[in-house]
Length: 216
Length: 216
DNA sequence: ATGAATATGAAACATTTGTTTCATTTATGG
DNA sequence: CCATAAATGAAACAAATGTTTCATATTCAT
Image 1 (cartoon, helix red, strand yellow):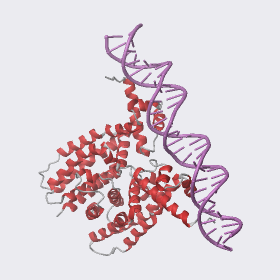
Image 2 (cartoon, rainbow over the protein chains, first blue to last red):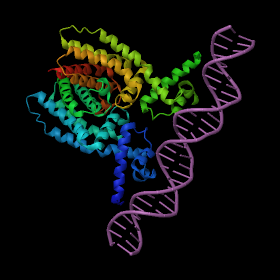
Image 3 (cartoon, chains in turn blue, green, purple, orange):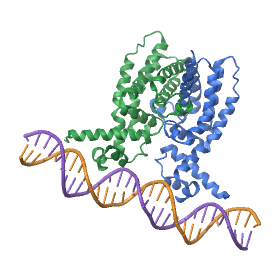
């Protein structure tokens, strides 16, 4: 059994952090191994030593934060009172359970989490998802949210529920991707970086979108 | 003044089409000049001859369909009766004016348009937008939609309007990006390719999202 | 402190990258 | 058909790519 030295573990993490940043900025193909190792202050061979390949490094970057995010969402989902007769409040609970962990990690989780959210947003619009194990790791907990919505709205069509989740997901990812589009569209008045300010409108929009769509 | 031969023009278009496809699939950095020229059946030097550089080819790919798309949207927007006392109908008109052209190009515009929509969706989540002239070309007509919404809802905050447009845009781009996420989440029952089926829920979701968000 | 396991440094590897060069071929207006 | 401009083919370029090798240095349980 391979035992890792403590100092080596530090370098591994530093490489993961640096790769996370650069992959978020320029994508998998836009970043070379030497870009990462130079930025991390190590030799280029160390990536192949620690991660075997560039592809594998990328997967480890993605994997690293899947579990914490999925868990935070599921814990929040478990806290929602599904028996509450006010369905709008229930939907808000479900929506927040999904969105809030990601937004809050992006805001308070440090640079690593912020970069990670950007990276995941990029992956979200690519087929890459389905060709890789990335998709399945996120799907397993995403399906739970879809199931809950189905139970809450038994008269709505399955398709409309799936669509709602897609729109919820799209708005969330687009919001955390930090593309600065809102900045240019508002002449710098509003910033896509200011997640705290966008959070509430996002909830409102998605909740109303869902309530209006599942209505039979 | 340089005069282009007819046959050469064909090759130029073929290169643009091939580049559009490959860029949509793997992004700018994921595609090499030789990937494109091999797929197009020409020599690798022809890209530098016809487009000077890879970067410039990419810009021409993006530019090629900006105008038609923006124009279709603005024409549809001009057709909306803003005096209609039923505000939900007006919002639907505005929303459709923005979304419908893109969806319909993606459905009926041939492979080129479909690839283009995927490509634009990728660009949508990147800072790339703002670093380039790409952004400005799309912004100029997007702002018109924001302005119309502001007029329609004078009591809503500017910020909420900008947020609404962001969510509208995100759902639209995510929907046309063909990432197959809906396929895996529904075990193959529903397909992200089936835009025709997603179109109506999308309108419903966005209209209700907007109506609920701008309400003061 | 020592020795075996682990990690690093430095260099090299074969490909692939975007681009340039230039002789040859092709197309078009006169 | 001719002359001239435009386009192509084939090769070459330096630089960058991911990965491997191996000698040296570092770590840490004993």
